[in-house]
Image (cartoon, rainbow, N blue to C red; front, top):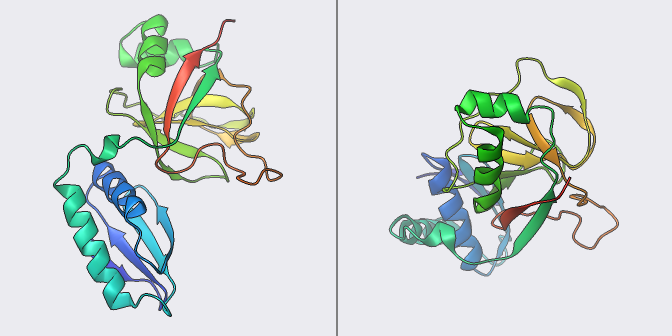
Length: 209
């Protein structure tokens, strides 16, 4: 782990892998020090925003170092129980067959592996509410489409690299689309606009077609 100053009100912690980043975020989120305003995870970093009137940068660095050190020695921190959500999916996506072919398995096997895996939100990116979901149960390494689609419908469930994700709104995209869900992933009218936030666990349920 490497800790860098990020202005006078934040620190940026860099990690060597997605798993280390997720473990550090979960550990810090579970043991927030007074004065920690916000934790923002990404693929290899966690940004820690602080209130300098409550917590100095030096004290924040000591808290971050201590908390992340404990997380690195706890292999199960990434499986800590937390908020969860079930996502109903109609596995009828345009890339289901070709994605299965890339993985060397049948479409039915791909659906089975995708729906039986326990996924966890690593971070939010791309557009508001787009959750990058990772899983220790699924061994996917899916290349993006050679040509991105101009429009991917809201609710589309896709694979790219080691991640699965759900398009919260219609937008261009190059992920391999396995199916669709009717669940609204982002709604600014809700008190909590995002249906999925970092640290949440996600399961996909096969919906009858």
